Length: 547
View 1 (cartoon, one colour):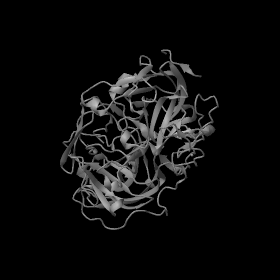
View 2 (cartoon, one colour; view 1 turned 90 degrees about the vertical axis):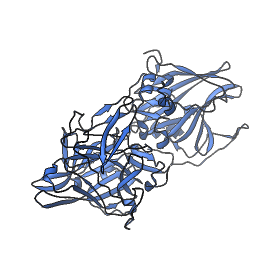
View 3 (cartoon, helix red, strand yellow; view 1 turned 180 degrees about the horizontal axis):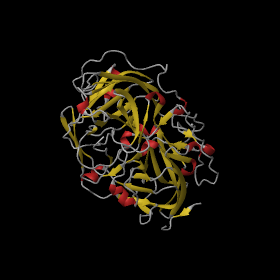
View 4 (cartoon, one colour; view 1 turned 120 degrees about the vertical axis):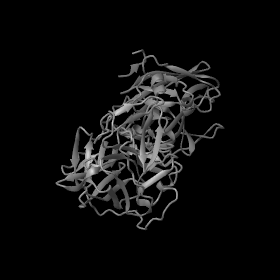
């Protein structure tokens, strides 16, 4: 039921439909809605999930109408809010700066945001507000709302953050938040943060008033991937919403890991070494054989390649990025040698990536203190690649996959014990990237998929990318753990490392710790060089100091 505001298989943009009608609108050169590259939803509605959009109050036939100027397909198409479904894609889930949470009466935990801090790094809709078509200032009111969480609009930029300024709340559904704001008549494009605190279907009713004229429109928004946006009726939802298709149940022999913490570990078994997966926290975990597991890299991991990361491809192109910091809703892969204390080893544990089968390249990397990527593992410039960890170490790095599909990564994990015995194990780990393939249907272990991986031997790179295989180690005197942002475009993400015997009390693996402005992430040593990172107002995950 609609609540008055009184205190208290998916379709994507790439699924194009042929344009059936195109009419010039006045002298502005705008095309009337009737077809574009956007996917169609229930009742013929268009799903908007990528590109620039402007919510524009404009004078039409002597009256005021709230319309959407959709530039997602190149040219501008004018659409009615009641005939579209705005999809807030899973990758829009990101940390919430405290000033935004305070202004909108919400939480500083992760939320789904359009126009937020990661807007430049994700493929998502970019909605703004345009005031120049109304003939004067326009009052925008959230006159109706329904949804599973809290919604709000606020302006908060990195420039505001740099001077510790407050967020500017425009309107929202939480108690105490303004219900309306004034859109100035000379505003070419206002770009607030659109925040949603829960997945599901929202219906936002906006009333616009300018020059004595009024219009009211209802916009349907689908947040996340719990509901297929192509099945949701637009507008006020008077047509019943079809039930979402049930998710396939994984087969009994395949264990799919789609989110949460999992370590690729060198495990001591009967005096030998076995490569196994440790799923869960330090205090509550399960061991798996790689040959029985499929790791699912969900669509929420899709990002744009930032400048300076050319080893991943062309900046701006898509990549599926698993950051070294834990992000809700996606898998968080790490490395673990905790079952081998340093005194049990002669040297370090070696993790060698022997081969990759799949539709694209796989890279594991971190950023040094200058923000330069260091790439221990990269199938894009030839294999094998190796990185090493000291005994008693737990580490996280950034991972990236260049295309959707099934990848089979074969690792050889080896070490020399203190008595001189050489121990090793070779296993193949399967990753399913994106949602083009149901991970529950993929057979784990080895397979015969084609590979896009070059087999040439890489040459040395002065920048630390390519064939560089630095040793990722952590001094026992280091401060136990670090978790950096790992976001594409971050200045220096570093690598999260925890070591045996470290002092201090930190949250268990997988727990989230909210940090406040000015808290510095703990120091870590990578190849002997100290790397420091300060991340303001960030939800940060930390590891236990003792493994």
